[in-house]
Image (cartoon, rainbow, N blue to C red; front, side):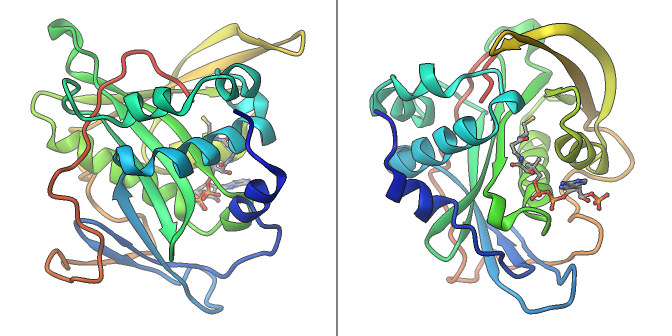
Length: 248
Ligand SMILES: CC(C)(COP(=O)(O)OP(=O)(O)OC[C@H]1O[C@@H](n2cnc3c(N)ncnc32)[C@H](O)[C@@H]1OP(=O)(O)O)[C@@H](O)C(=O)NCCC(=O)NCCS
């Protein structure tokens, strides 16, 4: 079910936006990265009710930047919405999460955390499905999402590290991850072949027992507790999923 051109436009408008002041569901993070105006962004965990916008956003990211991801737009767009609903469903999949950044009612960024089901590797999770809408890029949304994922990871008992892969040459993503404390530990040549072109993937890891706590806000942001603020989206029934080996 490919997404329509109109839906694409509404997801990824071309007009540049302002820097953000952002609020996450467990703490509020405020920042003016470039000092010109402000917006409020909410980061919250997504549930099955978010399946349609999440699917549309993810498909557009796959279509727009195919070399950044392991999944392809062609394969994923052929899957029904029920596949996305299953991905977001909480039942039987503890500890993982998919989070979304909202600017008002509009989804502008996504990221996921997957915790493997096998006991002997439940100490390591995977960050997957990271994407920010182009009009919102470069204003700290990616960093907010990664920090939220690390915060969730830190709350999972026994989890000591979060890994991810990034296509070699995807410098915005590599820089984002490095700025959040991830380090490269390996390189897989020809990890994916896209349009006949082999692309290597860098494997990165972030230990959760580093001195700077993963829940701390991104540098340049000021955090304040606001868990009782009714204006912030709170989900007591956090949708927790675990998807071994998933990638966007
Ligand atoms: C990669 C991506 C998620 C970054 O999101 P973002 O919201 O623009 O990132 P942020 O504004 O939070 O920036 C975080 C860091 O990355 C750096 N960065 C972001 N975009 C950059 C760019 N185009 N060039 C260089 N550095 C960049 C920022 O400078 C910042 O580093 P700093 O704290 O050292 O200054 C976004 O560009 C995107 O969705 N890309 C397409 C999909 C993709 O590549 N997903 C990742 C798959 S592994």
